[in-house]
Image (cartoon, rainbow, N blue to C red):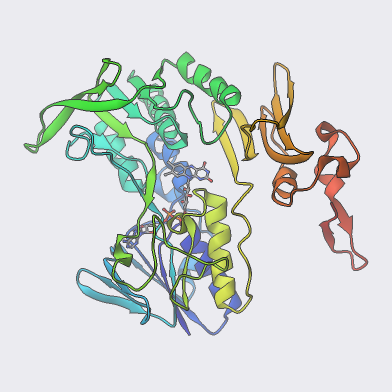
Length: 417
Ligand SMILES: Cc1cc2nc3c(=O)[nH]c(=O)nc-3n(C[C@H](O)[C@H](O)[C@H](O)COP(=O)(O)OP(=O)(O)OC[C@H]3O[C@@H](n4cnc5c(N)ncnc54)[C@H](O)[C@@H]3O)c2cc1C
């Protein structure tokens, strides 16, 4: 059989690897707009100059040189035929398979505010080409407005700060965020504030709970607009030479229109990650079940295994895990870490660490750990499986990975709680 995969990101690569392993006589064709394989989580290190494009490559196991694998790179899929499992670009058919895995990830969203959609000095941060464009623009920019203080926005700021330090250029960076805190999706307000303080110490200004409502522009080099300031609902104006936009992403699935595959905001999949068309699977950010790297990988692997006949159910829709690391301060959050009314909240804090557990009827709903996060992955298991803390028989602060492992007669380790 021949399997076609759209996307060379976390999900697509995991799917390709798994299919080649599971189906030893089969071939895989991967198609991507990207010409390089790279980790999007590392784009800030490219902006900072710490890493070149080659060192963002996360495939070093021979996949790309496997004789049963071929990669059509630098091609933008514009149309697919779900039933025929055929994939097309503007020039015609690119590939056709017995199965199809759709893993095109997402694109940065540009809201229809002022000249954000048309100005020459507005940059998203999703692809390597975006990071390259930011580095180029930063050669002549001094004042930078970053809209969005989530992980991607702060990644851009961090990369620019490091770039400024390395090149002796002092950027004047202002971050504008609609939410009252930075990293609102990733961490609770307390843990997030620690990062805000570190960025402020490095000279970054934050305008929180502020909405961008307009822009002011002059003429750009291409005759189009070039934004000179970002205008806020509060009446404030942020002067800028460039704008980095990090207000969210949307699944890159426009090519599914007319394919027979059901879509809503993302591609609709069942609990085995199969789309509405048999033999066509979707995974990663395009399936809209989560927006993080490890889950995209797990989904790519699971879709491929199901094609190979495993019949696995995707269970990681909850207990989403986030890790954050800026200025050497590490944090981990899992699940619903902001309590609802009636929840019990346990907190431990000293100068080095902050730890928080949210319980509902004794069952953990979410956690935040900051300062020390090593070996805390078991929380994902406890939260996902709704395991009451009193079942552990010891203080939740004293629990460790070792408490969860038992040994079978055959020597195999397994979760025992
Ligand atoms: C700056 C940044 C920082 C991040 N940091 C973290 C982090 O710290 N931790 C974390 O867990 N996650 C992080 N993420 C999110 C993580 O990168 C994504 O969840 C993950 O990359 C999703 O994998 P994917 O395979 O679904 O999509 P992607 O990695 O986006 O890959 C999509 C692939 O599809 C191709 N493609 C798209 N459209 C087409 C088309 N029309 N035709 C052909 N090919 C197409 C692309 O070229 C690409 O190869 C970050 C993301 C960004 C942008």
